[in-house]
Length: 189
Image (tube, rainbow, N blue to C red):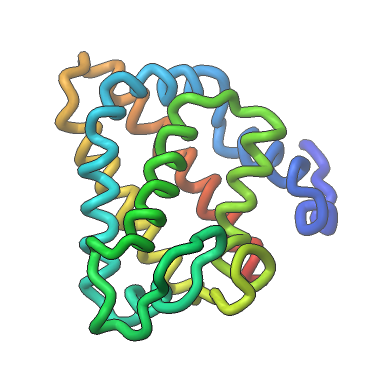
């Protein structure tokens, strides 16, 4: 039986990630499957991004987080929910971020830099990083991750891949999204 330092899980993100990847069995074969899906998923990223923002804009509790200054955005800021549309310049800026996130998942090595990036994805949705006024409740983050997970599963299911590759890819993304979700949740403790 392996001994795990539980207090270290809360203070050392690399240790936490190592424990989680080992526990879930997320390894090189999963990373290869994720990277192998890149050429199939890349053309579909804009549609996935649009679907995410369409969903976020269907609810006041998720749309409200896009009113006000967004970290890194320098253009015109919407004043209220009614003046904010998915075509707004700031939302186009946010969509580019989500698109780069999805591309990063399927193209970059899973090293310390990736771990820092995945951890920051969780942190920037809290006042701990990015905009101090941005504080997306955990329930909204979990809803978003559930939607993204389902959208990716549906997309991968429709890819023209052999059965074995499709199963490996689905399982790899499932593990990855659980890892990402943990790195989001840890910033809410």
